[in-house]
Image 1 (cartoon, one colour):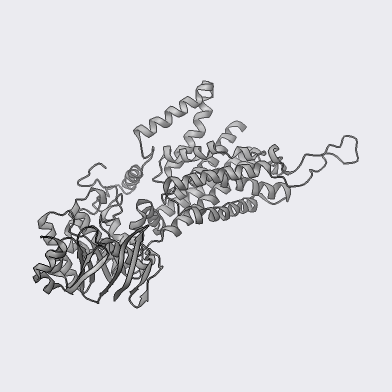
Image 2: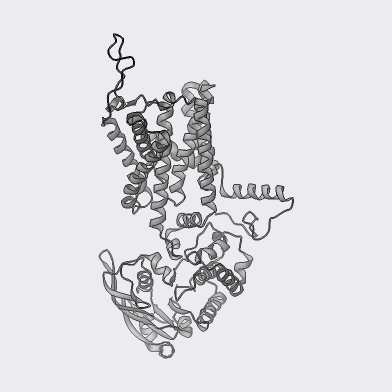
Length: 330
Length: 235
């Protein structure tokens, strides 16, 4: 059972990571830098709980703030870059962060497991990141007797909270403005929207969300190293969004769920796992370029639910789900 | 209302505008005409802040615009309808129109303006749930102008509104432009269709390789065949 609690926790963390990519994706920015923010959140909050004895909630918040501040510092100069160049800059950022955490060492000596004067006294190892050896003994959960089941439950609640944030955002004026920027930056400026502000804002929020995920991940695994936060990981996060669908916040959930569950289920296939993975990705890109869940699908589903509840057909010319009178393919 | 003084713009080494000075008074239609590459679109893009002038000054509504961001210029009521229309392609017609009113908070007035625009261009009401990219060229142009009107422009800058339209639609387009004027909108109109533009404009500037070569009352320019032929080629 504990195994499945861990899988559920990882699904939640990966969903949150997928949303962190989605946040800037909404304004048309493809970020490959999320692993860096993930690492910052993980190391910052683990330091606070393990070294300074903070509670996990404020520590997670500080992890998010730290990631957001670094996100702002990265976003302001790099968002002037367009398309691929921005993506390359964010990849470089991941590598910088990885190397920093590979080499950094701070913290304190661990306490004695048993009374220091006794013959059996064993000193716990270094508490804090220890260069290439990584940050071990992030034991907040065991110290505070939080069971894997409880932790998984809190993570599910947190996922719901983030889901509500994105649900509201997509229906708000701000979300509309972000979509307009994604569609066409110049047209968005033409209706008086500051594309730079919106992009930087969405990017910083995305960084903060990745920071939250980092904190959750560090405390779940109890052991992190700088090398965990590498480029394959950051590519995987983007894959959640691309495969699941980047037009609504539902897509990244599906992408994260599939990519967390599939490798677990397909463990039997052993070394063919990655090949299956590649085939699944290729198939999605060939057959569903906009991802598994598209905006139109969500709208149709919403209309159907509305109809089911009110018992009448609400599809009218004003309904976005209504079929266009004269649709032509792009 | 709008005044450019000796505005120069370069694309790298290439000097696109070599010192343009022009004036648009409130309630007028002013047109910029000239051949391809004369700098007409560049002038509009510079006014709306998409390009930064290397020298010279631009004043709108008593304020200097140098260095102002494009979205701030838009918010001050100077609306640019660029060539190629710049629609939000994957959004519906209705969403595009409402995007034009994004910076306004007067909900009732927005609704009534939406009604006005849809009365002016009934096809937009018919197509309101359709995505912008599925529209025809003429419909796209109407949508672009409709969206601009939704932001209650003080000055509307139209870049080649007749481009790519069927002849009958070109005529309708110029008619709508003069209707807008009669309702009090100030317009700066860029056109290659010099005769169409001069017929509705009050004042005209003829551009040639980045310079104003003639500026004149539109009607007298229209009758001055030799001048037009000299600068625009046989029409």
